[in-house]
Length: 382
Image (cartoon, rainbow, N blue to C red):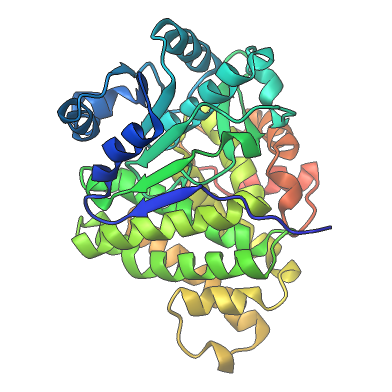
């Protein structure tokens, strides 16, 4: 079976990259732009950095911001209705994973209305048409939703998240400007950064990993280890490094999948509203320890990329432990907790079932039983 790589048609990187947006919109003949952004970004003027450029260029737009941190089926359906009522023909999505995942689902359903129930998009949906033309502008350095073929929606009624994988949902353009990330608070910077590290490490060790995606993931790990602490302190170097690192990680994992740190994190977010990046960071070293005997020599390269010295003189058990310890240290340094708030024993059974059924689970290098999921979940109980 051939390996495949799906990426944006074009992406722009670096300070002031957002100035490219009006040029793209005019060149493509956008008539009415649907700006999809979350309410806090609108409130605090982050979205305005882009809409000001649209105003200066005389481009017409409407803002949709009815988006929750874990976007719901209703958010998507309301967005589809708003898009149609506005007679929009294009999307600019500004934000983190919540805004971008919502925009992806809206864009897919507008062009593939047979999936308007949203639930039918779960898994690998057989959509026929590419989503509405979309420019994606990340404001967090973590999800890499601007370059992935994945999105996650919360089913409030069933208390679960579901993952959608669709080559037709990838944004046409990504505009990765570190200045759009400068207003992120420390906690969010830390959480999204650790999400990016989880993408890189799980993508590197997943069953489908191959040479090209390994290249992306190792470089992402190296950049995150070097820059996340600085990004949390809001240094220019740290912000720029993380903006690039999370995109590179996205280039890889979007094409090969993830593992059970993500499948468990999804269920924590669905049940307790745990921030996704926090849940990933808590689970990552635990899952690394669980998987280590199924990863060959890859933990040596993870340790090296994390900045551990002397790995070539270490035994297999030593470099594997060094990689795990380096991840734990970084997580602690940026303020990530070691347990999941609200986790109770009576919830473990359902949490394990949801994680077992999650779309990320099959990619894990070690096949995982329901009982093993329960054991892993109990390790992060306070």
